[in-house]
Image 1: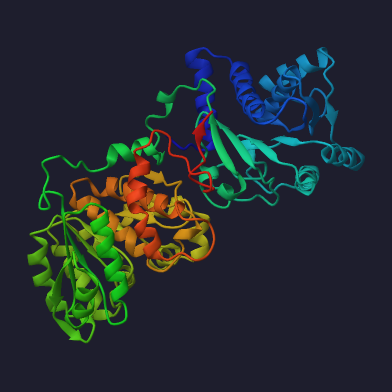
Image 2: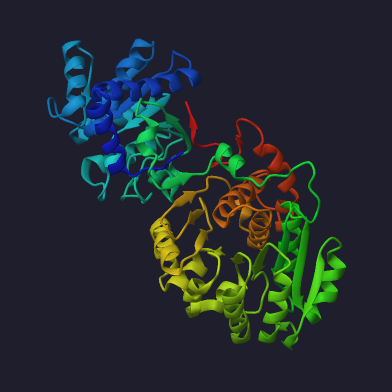
Length: 526
């Protein structure tokens, strides 16, 4: 499923009318119908609904919704922030119809109107937010801000139309004031602002409503939403005649003094991800601990320059063993000093198999990040926002406010696949493709979680799928595993690891929905 910007969606609306012959009024009525179908499926007919309609097509949707809800037997109060006769285009068509049929439209323009609106909210059961939609590109001020604050003060459940009012539909930014929705029905395709924070947290549960915009219009768009069906199609095959040698040989370079746990988690994750054989190369002095903890992993001792720090001279040994494998991960629990940076630079240039770099490897690279361009295969890196900020030379705040843009820009600049971790993980490629992952929650915010992700991704690559596909599948499965844990405290990375088996089974179900997760249950068609 493609994720669109507001301008692209407007263009596709226009093309649907011009090239496919469906008038804009038909699309608007279809949008209103999807909202009413949702309300009727969840709320009994005797409840009272307040609809707030603003300017533009979003307000026009609100006019349609109010009329159709009334026909369906609901008690409806329609409020508009637009003066009589000031609507344009299709919205004006529906306003004229409502006026001709004497449908009551209450106007909001004064403080007294706002007081009456607030009183109306006090006796309502639901608010339908059709105030601003996708058109917000500057701070919300004045009367519109007052309306939003009145809605939030009313503590009503809110159903947002397309995008909660006050959210920038392209980057998820809060434009001064925002309506917090319990549900959002977005039309034809999800919008970027619903998938990026903080907009994603304001939208509640998201549904995609069909309004006759042809799906083929978006075939060339390059931002993809990860869905169960897509991930199922990417997963490596496991033929019935397979054996451990044919299901992927994974090698991981990890660990240092006091950081053996990261190496253990990455190796165990690679095993649970399906790799037939996992080799863990670590500093020689750390290996006895690793061998005691890992009974299914082959541990390879590496020469040290000092206790717990791999010598740069180990590069030749690592490369020789990597030739017997299918993929190589470097970083979990590694020391981050100059000698590690020298080692990693050599491995990037010489690795005969695809690379995944994380944690200590990314920190050690630092200003040498452009070394990624020398890799034989396009490498995968998995930074969290702080690591991304250091690598890109910007602040963590800048990363979080422009996650997609920064990830796209630097994937191209460094010639790598970037998995920018965090809520709604972003995956970008050097050629400009991007994906956003809706799975995962705060349960993943624990030490060792990133090591698991690294192990899972390198395992998928070793099993024969491309680094890009492995990045998407790994992020999605890892997120499901976190979602399977009950919300709240008390979880560790090992709890996530244990859920991988169930996550794989769930992926095979036709309709993957986890109601307790604020992200995964989102984005399903009406």
